[in-house]
Image (cartoon, rainbow, N blue to C red; front, side):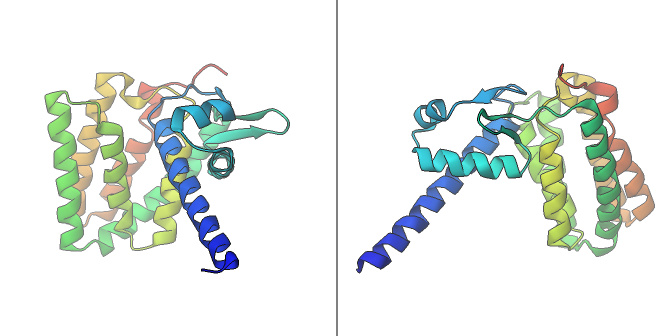
Length: 223
């Protein structure tokens, strides 16, 4: 192996390691393991996750680009904490694109798509009824990813996922109240039924309601 080839291989390995760390940190951010507005010190991240400085810098830059972190020049990175106005604008955009995607999904979903979505909805419902809450945020993400994948437009479904994740830091969750959790679960069941019936307008109505549940059951963290 030449020195040039070795250098290229090492660079690819370093990039892969940085990407893997970015995924781990992203998962912890979405799980609420860091407070909104909390500063992330590079040295602490290196120690906590057993990674090097290069991996930390790449990951922080990537997560700032996803708007999960805010970058302040000469100060560093901190967990995103959107203002009330920023959150309102985010949900306005989400409402527009997710309603359009839901209508398209109603027309394009295959029987296999619907069956896979049903499995996730059933699993979510089963866990809610049993009070098994620990894994619900991750399951909810998978459920929504599967739903919007049915629109058949990967660019749109990816954008929806990124917008959804941007709304997670900086507020208490809709599920802080059990009523909010059961309301979300009810919406998922309704989405499944309307999807089976290919009811695009009904599905759009439920998606609108589902998206705006946060106004009832959650509130922004203090700015």
